[in-house]
Length: 204
Image (cartoon, rainbow, N blue to C red; front, side, top):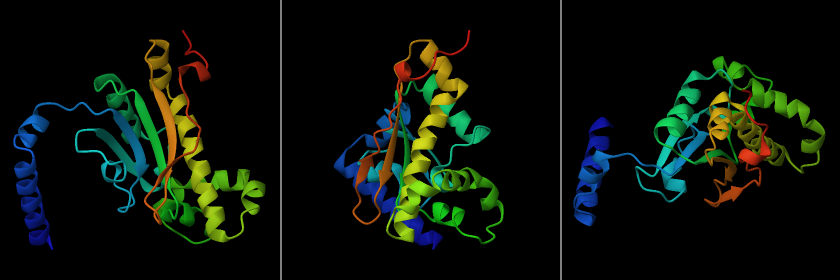
């Protein structure tokens, strides 16, 4: 398996160099992505692939069910680096339909540590139980929960001190919410973008 992976890498590297000589030399000298992507760890949703972007164009953080925890130092460190070091101005929280993490959050089954991680999703499921009950099937209800999880994630990112300080400095940063369809490969805008004018000014 590893030998096959290494061969695939060598073949890809060779093809890329033939298609665009100097590609890797250029990529190695700088990192100037336009987007910071917070997405799900699902192997079917690689950020640069589904967004049609090349390596170097998107800075990525992924976790199970793209959950935004206010005490997640991994996510916060990546967010701070994206905003302060890379000067990224477009932040995307992206979930996907058919999310296994969202499904786990709706099941009355033990999932180990994942149960602790998915508690915010479970809380959303309870808060929007009436809204979700209008969906026609269990799959539709889970997909609605995946959308709600993205909207909540956008709000939580916007509330971080990192974003609040950046907006207070006058940085023009926008936080968007997208959802990806595994069945059609399409990204959809959930129309929940938050920009500086929509949030309270950071405290002095």
